[in-house]
Image 1 (cartoon, one colour):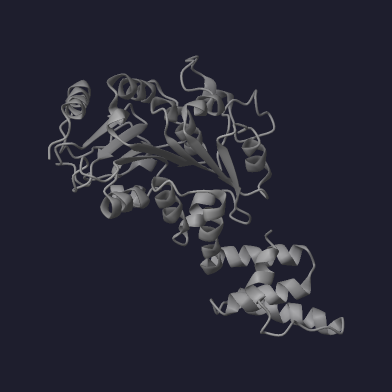
Image 2: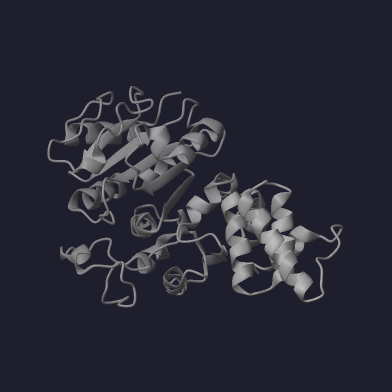
Length: 357
């Protein structure tokens, strides 16, 4: 069936406001940075009547794509809003935001992808105006659920702009709680240039999250800066989830298995909790990089028994030189101590996973 008159009107407003056609191929400005190169030759589904793609100034772009299935059928309508900083080799929307495209195809979600061509923290008048108008026009009201997400600087953007859709679900991965170096002088990643404009809009991510229904903060407690930012999210509706050994970008670590997409699905099904995430997080055992970090952590503790058990468990999944060397070294150290590894029948995976607890 056709989209609601209200939503169709919104699309027309933006089409006229930005003077673009729905099916226009995206071009790169002659003044653009090299990092923007040939991103987005053609938007997926750009000829769809209720989809649009527009530049927001020189440094940002927005895609909105509805699913092929009817958004207004009996299923819950979900809009997935993700903020990203794509890599140089990303060419199509599916390259930039594969999870969003997967959710659109698999579950019939609508997709809005906000793109920054460089590290701007999405702090730009054009982006502010875009979300202001979405808010005023009631764009988000047509959806039963709106999910905002981003990682690191993009998590900062997901936090502040979620205020435009009260009652939304917000998934923040390795988030930066403030971009203001005056509030976090302990974080060398922040710069006063970020706050060069004096606009009061969309400045305080922690405070603006008060409009959200629920917020999930995923971070690696071993990353000191990320852990310190996580402490700044203090609201009762915030669930903090520790993802040990996932590194500086938890979303990337989770995406190495199917964990990231399962987290997003659980959020859309209203089943995401700390307990349900713990079950999802077990998939990290199938991530070679995670297992390598796990074994490295055991070596730092100088515990050859745990290192050996962890390496032996890893070798059941990956025949890698690093794991073999770690096992051989651990066995050599134990022999010198007159010890040996526990019997293979021991629940070796459980023992190895306890290292990360």
